Image (cartoon, rainbow, N blue to C red; front, top):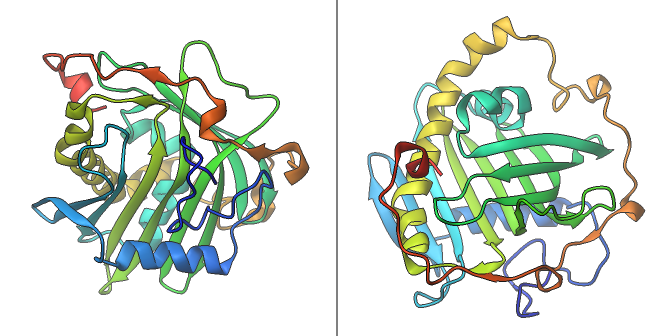
Amino acid sequence: LQAGGGVRDPQGPMSRGGDMVYIPDDSDFSSFRDQCESLEGWHCRYNKAGVTVWSQGQEESCTVQKIKTRISCKDVPAETLYDVLHDTRYRKKWDSNMIETYDIGRLTVNADVGYYSWKCPSPLKNRDFVTLRSWLPLGNDYMIINYSVKHPKYPPRKDFVRAVSLQTGYLIKANGASGCILYYLTQVDPRGSLPKWVVNRVSQFVAPKAMKKIYKAGLKYPEWKRKHDPGYKPWVYPEQNTLPSVSLTELSVQHADSLENIDETGLPEDHLSTSDHEA
């Protein structure tokens, strides 16, 4: 994939370039895992209460860098957290950033296309994504990765800025009998030059809070799931998947430089309300 300036990111598993959409293979998952576990080239921005945040990229740059977060989740098995991150219905319960999310269609037993929109901190405009998502259980570990694609029936909307995920994903590693470690790595082109305060707030506040929310969601999920169609897990049992099939030929790579770019660098940092803080 190409970033906004047409520069290819040599690190990313989603960097084959060109316009051909493809489903990630074992080498892409392996590369993603290596990035999650490697410390080389990462700058630690936050490390408190079991949550660490790193960034990679230009400190002075106003575009969002590559960000990686890690949290140790005691008493949440890896399998449970994997379910939490897949379960669209449950996401509405814990993800207060989210405005709307839905699955568009399935590509294979372990890949689909979906839509996600999220609230940005005021006074920024809200963003949305259309992504190809793929997942891989590996023994006691699990990975979910995505990148942005174009779907003819889901063009950019007037009320959102269409952002681009160059690569985003989760690595969930079993840790002892009943715990896990969660990594979240994201490289997103927000389609706009953002104020410095946004970049700082993401690493110092937004990312740690988001990780803690996922952890809490994991603790509460088993009880919630018992009351909400407990046997229904199409990400585990693909025969339950009733989504329409999507062909790769319907999709194309969403290059960042083909989208509107807005300049929000001059926007001041608002006095934040609770809802803004959760963005």
